[in-house]
Amino acid sequence: MGIVVEAVYENGVFKPLKKVNIPERAKVRIRVEIFGLLKDWSVDAQELKDELREVHG
Image (cartoon, rainbow, N blue to C red):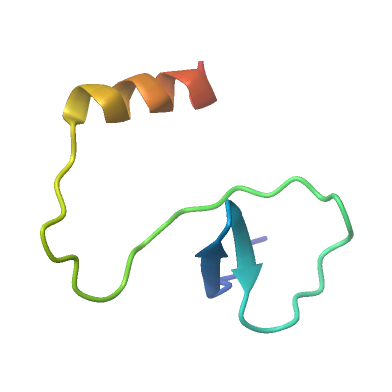
């Protein structure tokens, strides 16, 4: 089962905009979609790959 939860990323933590009915400390999978304009935003592809490798092994 899955749900969509809108959240704000702040100080290293995703904060839901509305109350969610999920048990405390439940393990979840998050897919991030960024909304709004990203002026002067660039991505270092190798750095992104390295970070993803650290997270996913």
